[in-house]
Length: 112
Length: 116
Image (cartoon, rainbow over all chains, first blue to last red; front, side, top):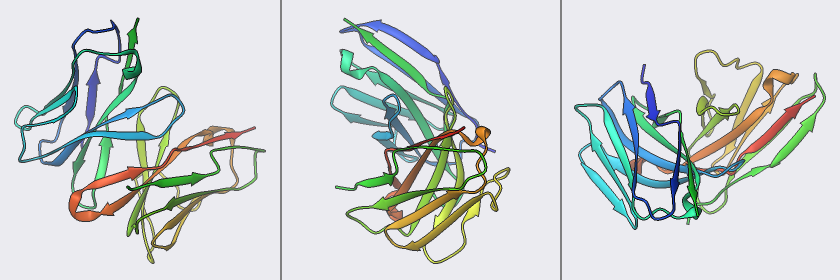
């Protein structure tokens, strides 16, 4: 059974700082790994999707990497802004049927 | 775009009543939709996979007679929480596959259920 863990659980940084969020998964036989953003009381916004054959994906100030062999993914946020404050979730797709297993999330607060 | 809506966004009900939550794909057809539950400070847990025209597949530990899922069309799936109890209070989120080949799910905004 796939288990996905994220560290840290919470993170507070000053505006402008670069930061890294970590995601680890126990079953390396994944189809892809995704990073999502969730604002309080809201649904999910997809940020980046990395296919199992890829090593990284970039979108604006966000860069996600994937190392299947070690069961790890990182989300790098450059020049953080207060608007980046949210909970960030990673999710691995394994097995058939496009089922996602979500991590525990990292709650990020970017302060002025 | 790929927009998924949920209705209602928030519902409060008395213990013992049933509540229906709708999940719609507004600008695309979705052969498969997924239902998740999220308790406070916790991550999303998959409850069931809903396939158009067939019975839903439930995850281990999810009671299929309590959480009724109907996927009658390619744009609508419904989740009915039957005989709701306070422990069913949670944030319910659906997602829809726009295209199975892309492995991309589009998520609804969620429904906050509070059972008194």
